Amino acid sequence: MPVFNLTIPDTSPLIAYDGTWGDSSHIDSAWVDYANGTFHATQEYGASATLIFNGSAVYIFGARRDNHDYYTTTLDGMSTTGYGQSNTPIFNSSLFSATNLGGQQHRLVLTNTFTTPADPWVDIDYMVITSGDGNAQTQSADVWLDDGAHNITYSDGWDTSPNGLEASYYMNTMHRTNVNGASASLLFNGSAITVYGATSTDYGLFSISLDGNDPPLLLNGSAPVFRPQNMLYYAGGLSDETHNLTFTNADPNGSWFDLNKFVVSTWPTFETVATSSSSSFTQGPDPTLLSPSQADPV
Image (cartoon, rainbow, N blue to C red; front, top):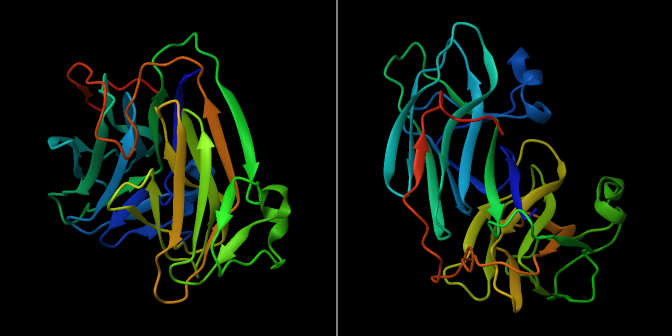
């Protein structure tokens, strides 16, 4: 490290789903064949899934099945068509891959574009981004912070009392709020940060601002079941200075949002200067888009 692959599960709020998607339906007996038993699937034409990220490579994994068809993947405005049908189910299959990306922020969108109404499905199991400073010799130091760490400041409206689910959380603690506008800010020095919290049926919209970026990133913590320690946010390639990460409950309907743990990674020397909220970046060579058959497994 710090050239490493970060797996983003299909359940992470980092992946924004638009249109009608099913979340890990157990009506489909093949749910057990997906990573961690979860997947997002859609049969709606035009339904999409979007990931905004910083990294040198990105991969989408899902299944190829007999009721799947064409889909379109668009990376930074460049579109490619994929084909997801297979008479014999293939799980953990690479649906898309792009490498040799520059350090700027990227936008990846997978859209269902089936052409055969009888085979309208596409699904997502997980995504992977390659992150780090580009130097395999650099050593990374990771610091885990509990939600009660001294460098986290909470506004009014947060609750830390036991709710019967605390055993599922890191260190058996969490800060939670159902107050619209309640916020929490973390000051940290590091090259990357990963944030974890729960998603569930009564959770909703929340926003994230890194170093005051405007507009903030708006994400959705709603899920059909309770999922503790879910990946809520990741940013890498941060500059060597103090950063301010602010979370806000942005749901007007009394839905919950919680914070559980933060992992701050420090890379002593690195050249990448892009962040998920910065306009300055190191431009790399033109990206290499790989067809699903060319993509190397991660």
